[in-house]
Image 1: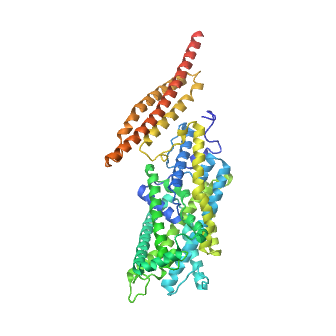
Image 2: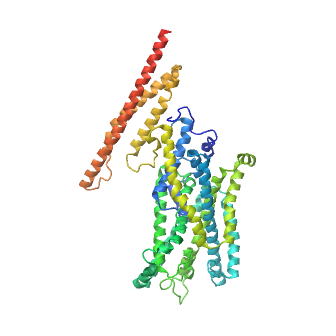
Image 3: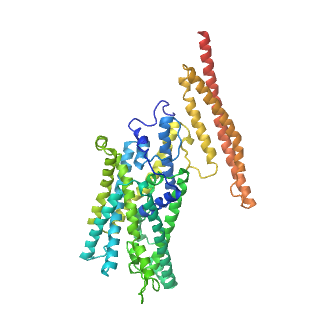
Length: 545
């Protein structure tokens, strides 16, 4: 290795990280994984940055590569069924201080998130109960809610805690069927919200919409503080990706699933926000409560002169949306943060009570306090503001930090820039060529490590000679095959001019890769020469004896 060829990749204190992540999972395909990821994105949010999401995928792949190389010597940076929590990645690349920092941020952020989920569920169900059972209204977030409204809020909080605390003890893969149904429900609810708001805007007329737009303005910086926290809270889910992607089969679909979930959810968020702003004069902190007066008549919110079952169905589906949303998201977040907390739990207590019991305790320890907070503090805008501050660190800072420290770690250990490349690093067609070149360089590195120990062992000498010979052949073969890259032109249906531009770009790219491969071949030749000299010295020494 670059720093110490005889050092281990992971110290004894960290060697258990690789084994601890190897859990028995129930694999499922890209469709179910997309549904699960959508539940994370819409339920817990996901900051709309494809870059930080890709950084998360790369960090997961590098963590697997380091664990693989610890036992085999050769890294293979790809996502497998082994799960790496954010705290695990931080400890692997930085140490215990990094793990503690990540766990602190995740803990504070997720407690705020779960706090908001509990408040949303209870307020929504209390509103539904008053509307359909008592024929009255209940707005917990109002200036002076009635005592009956508050009592129903507390009653539904007790029901909510019973449901989610049971679900939080289940692994994510065990919830696949439920989460798939909830994902479909979310899409239907989003579609109904968009359709009903569009009808209202069209029915009200352009003048009304224009007046609402004028009242809001293009940008209102005075409300930036109010919007900053809720936006970050609603758009943050990178830390959930280890759980969401662990059961995915095949793993090659990881980036497609993550990016598709981001684009679908981000589009829905944008449309709901825009249409909601120009559809209503007064906005409720919990947007779905604006459908509590939906009738389906006129513009959708006008008084009906007759019974309209369709309007009632639409109203119930939308009002139940946050209820279904948080029931789905709460246990998933509890599982993620609880499993991260397990890493910091005293090892002697884990050994005494067993890992399964300790894991359940950690999950409950994370999931129960936010329910108590929601009983004491119900204001949703205040909760969003507090949790959103930590969402900034979790959504933007930590994935970018992992990208830097993970890349430096791999480059420092293996001694060349390509050691940090993963299957998510390049989006171009030439990744297979890059991956082959990097694997070849790593194979060269591991073959040459045997040279210092080969002077006294005939078997070692022969293994080293064979390894370097095969390596040289692979290098020459790669140099020859690089020219084939130009034949794989994407977009054959493009115009002739576009195809020529693509051709020139690939020619330049091919020449750069060929130059890199020639350098690898020259380096291999130099090491082969050194190996031959070593073997010659050994032979001459034996002859003199």
